[in-house]
Length: 294
Length: 231
Image 1: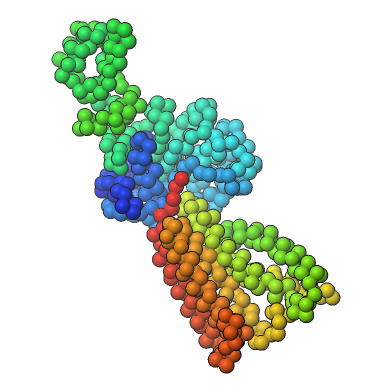
Image 2: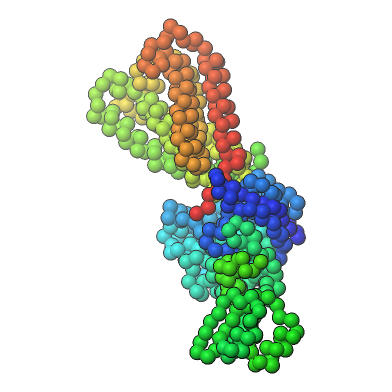
C-alpha cells in the first residue's frame, strides 16, 4: 500500500447508554508519527480499536484510502494494533508468535524481528508467560515494528519496560518509519519521553477531539514567562494564564496564546525570560482547563 | 476457500487437536479401569468407541465454549475478518469432529483385538445400523461444538447474552440428541417411542442438517458485528 491516508469523519461510538466517542474527525497520513494523548478514560483505546476494526463506529465513518477497513479482507491486515496483553496463559514463544504473524501478514520481516530481539536483549525461544512484564511489552513492540503494516498502532506499549528498553524502542520507531514509511500512532502517558517522536499531536478529552496539530505549531500555542514577580505579574496581567509558580522572588507564568511583536519587545525590555512550553505541560493544562482554552 | 480461511483452519485445528492429545489418553485410562474393575454384561461388551460417544460430545462442547475466548481476539489482531474467523471455526469443528471419531474408532478396533475389551458399537443392544450410529454421532458431536460456540459468543458479548445463549444452545442440543436417540434407539427422554419412529434415516439427516444450518445462521448474526474487547 502506498501513500495511505486514514480518515475518520464524524465518528461516534455508543456503548449501551454511554456516549464513549463523539464526533471524531481526524486525518492521518503515511510517514508521520502521531501522538495520541488523553487522560484516563478519555477514549484513546476505544478510538484505536475503531481504527483497528475491533469495533464499528455507531455513527460516522473510518476509511483507509477511501475504503472502510471493517471486515475488509485486504485492509484489515494492513492495520496493526499492539496493546498490553495478558500473557499469563500464553505458552508459545515470541518466535512462535512472530512466525504466526508472518503467516498472515506478508510484510512481516522475521529477520528484522530477530535483530530487535537482540537489541532489546531478550530471548525469543522462551515461553512468553515466563517472561517479565517488560519483556512481554518488548515482544509486543517487536511484533509491531517488524510488521511493516501501513498503519501501526502502539497503545501504551512501553508499560512495564525499563528505561533502556524504552529508549531503544523510541529509536526503533524513528528508524522503522524511515525503513518502511507508515502511519504510526503512539498512545502514551509518558508524554515527556516521547514528545520528540511526534510529528503531530492528537488530544482527546471526554471522547472528543480537542486538538490535532503538528507538534511545533501546537507548542506555539503557549509560552512560559519567568522573571521578577512584579514584572511577570504586570506582563501577564491581561493574558490567559494557565498556571503560576513562585520560587522566592521569581515567578513563572504559563500563558496560553501567541505574543505579538509589541509584547515580545516589552518582554525583552523588562528582561523577562520567555521559553516555549513542553508538550506535557500544555497537555496537562489543556485537559484540566478545557473551558479556558476555547 | 481462500488462503486465509485455510491458514486459520489449520492453526485452529492444530491447537484444538493438541487438546485432544490430553483428552484421549485420559479416556483410554478410564476405559481400561472401567473394563477391569466393573463387571456388568453391558460394560464387558462395550467398545472404547461406545464409551467415548458422550465424552466426545462434551469435549466438542467445551472446545466450542473456548473457541471465541481463545481465537477471536488473536484472529482480528492478525487481520482476519470476522467472516473468515467464523468459516475457519466451522471447518475446524468439522475436522476435529471427524478426526476424533476416526481416532476413537482406531483405538477401539485395536483394543477390541485384546480379549479384555468389548467391541460393541453402543452400550447395550444395537437397534439400528452401524452407519446410522456413526452418522448420528458425527452430526451430533458437530452440533455440540456449535452449541458451545453459541455459548462462547453469547458470553463474549455480555452476561445476559451468555445466559440467553445457554438456553438457546440447550434447546438445539436436546433437539439433535432427541432426533438421533429416536432414530437409533427409538427413545426420547428414556420414553419408548419406537411405535412412532419413522426409521427414516434420510429424513433424520435432513432435519439434523436443517438444525445445523439454523445454528450456523444464529452464529453468523452473532459473530458478524461482535466488538473485540481490549483490556
